[in-house]
Image (cartoon, rainbow, N blue to C red; front, side, top):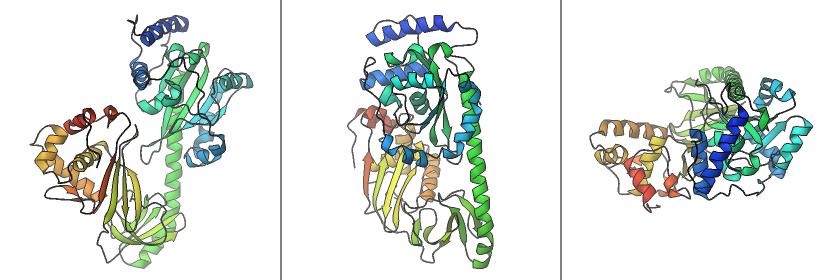
Length: 427
């Protein structure tokens, strides 16, 4: 695991660094030549803020969602690690100079703790429970910038985009769901700028990793409990079946190919259901999950609509609506690129044409066919071949980001680069 980069290096004078960063900040915000460059993670964040037109001297208060705070806490997936995080950072907060904050995947503050004095200082900044501290709301800060960069970040004094935050320092690290890699939220330690310490970011990052390990242990324990219940049931059935938890993670399987997880439709109920990787299935309730049995009728239902959602700055999503339910799932960057190309060309694309669109090399057909095979296994009935195209009759829609230049920002595919600069085509 790489050691996170602190804002102030060991042995460096924080006051000198703060003065330098103040001069760099003032020059950058006024368009003058700066005496030095900010750290890469900070410079990239500043550019995002300037490109969005955010005012560094603005004093608009973050949005506070106090009425929905309890619901946000319950749905965050972070309740089970709150004690683990608090114990790991107790020594930092106990000194009274810093506060501990846990935010969700959108940067909304779910919990905070600390001395009354430092909490009062945080109140004046709007750094309160229920406040949105994503980059789009309050500019460069450890919570929002950790979420965008997907890494541990320390932000010191004038590295904050909002001038009103320059009296503070903060260190935040993302907490990921160990099952999916998806970010659940951020653990953050913040306080007055003079309290900055180079080791804080490393400590926060270690605590975030410990929280992930705790989540993994809890999930393994739950699957073992479901496996104990399901094993004798599967033995009695005498036909292909599997037991999954409520999120589709497989606890036990009999006479079927091994799966780590299957995609379950939203609002699943007992009865007949189409599972993308299995076809038509019968599902029954189990304690802590579902019993899934592939049906003798293995025909895949027609999809009425398909939505490729690329509007957020996070992972691309695929939505499917069919006769037996609807699904919304995160997909990989490569699969998002493939589906975008096919959405822009509903008449279909051959393997060489896809290779050219994705790699700029028509000869990479083997790679394209392998990716298409993986995609069709994950989402049976979504794509047809010869040429590759979406299934007949499905209404396909692409949701683009507000700024088309940010479309699939990590992609290097020529077709995506063209879609960023042109008007594209919304299907």
